[in-house]
Length: 125
Image (cartoon, rainbow, N blue to C red; front, side, top):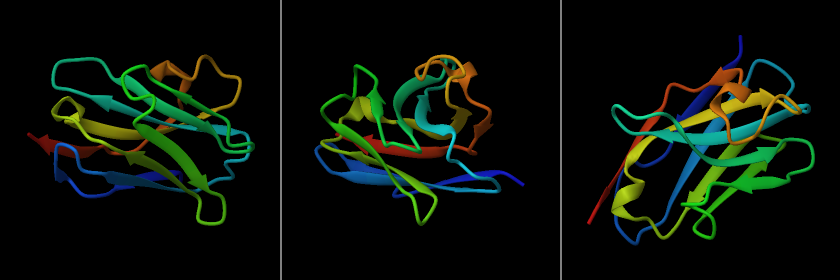
């Protein structure tokens, strides 16, 4: 059974750093792209960052480039999102996703087959 499980600290202050983790299990991820999206109430899921499991190449959304870093630990089957410095507008529900390489664009939510349950991050100013 495929599972993506997000974890991290849920409440932080503006200017702080935060690392989210996504533990991936249930299949081999060699031919997959892993990503983070975020979603606010009543809005569409927005692309944050993506990484190729095989070669580690990365892509970022415009609003986070230069502040967020996506990485993966091959041995632990875990993907990370390092966020700093955080801003109040980074408050959102963050989702981990996995999609086959070559299937659509990295920034499009429909390119992903598997999703985590979501993790609320609240940044206080």
